[in-house]
Image (cartoon, rainbow, N blue to C red; front, side, top):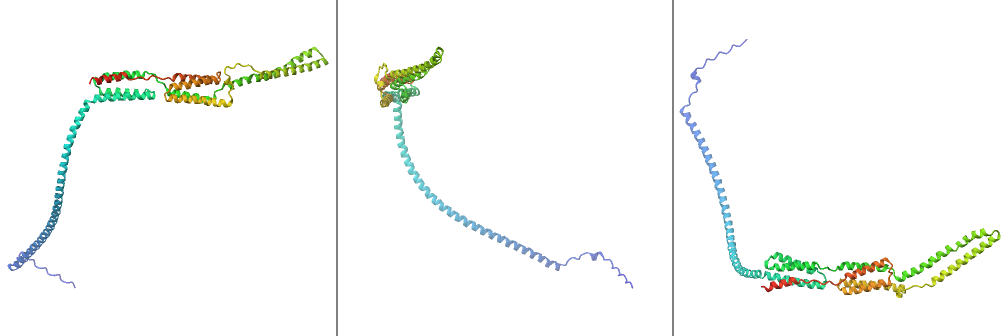
Length: 386
């Protein structure tokens, strides 16, 4: 059977719904609990602060100890540096004293050097003139020894350049004299020894190929005999051929045969007579010889003749290099006479070599070397005015 629904509860009153305030007995212990908790928190905070303070104090103590140690080390280093500074100061003082002494010595030397420079500046012109005069005299001696004008030209050019750099009005007279001497030396014709030596070398190289008079005369004597031998065979057979037609036209039969035999025999006889006459003419020749010794030179003598000629040319070459022009001309004249006497004058090569030797002999002459007299006179005049 169905159960009965529960009965509805009665509605609560507003007064029952409000919380009841605690009693004073209950508030006292609760306040004490809150106060104890606050005190515990404060104690904990104080303990934390004390601990952190202690840690800071320890850290500060450690920093103070480290700083004290660093200060002690720095003070030790400062003492060492102070001692080093004292030593350095002592050394500096000693060096300063030494430098002062050297400075005083340098001052004395400077004063002496100033006096020397002043004396040199006063005598600079005199030294310049003395140097120019000495250089010119040395160059003149070198030119006389070597036969070349180059040392004198170089000395005059150097003197002109030095005077131009010096630029003193009272030395202008000396410079004008130097320029005049320089132009006069340049105008002198100088012997070109190098070219003459090259020409002599060329002549010596051609000596072995030059034909001698003896060889040329032998060749000229052999030429007529060869021409005669070539002419006889050409003229011998011509007579039978020319006579054969005439004999054939004059006779007939047996007469013509006898005439042919007679003509051939006559031709052979004429050919033999011509040969004999040619041999006789070749054995006997009449020739005009102005220098018999040039024709009668044997092959051995021809070798020594050429070698002697080369020696003459070599002596002339050495004489030119040593500036002995008289000796060179003498050797060249002997070489020219040898060429004209023993070598074939009809050969063009011989004629060219003779002309070359003659030209070298004409150019090999002693040249009078000029002297810088005007410059030396101007230098003497300036020195006399001091």
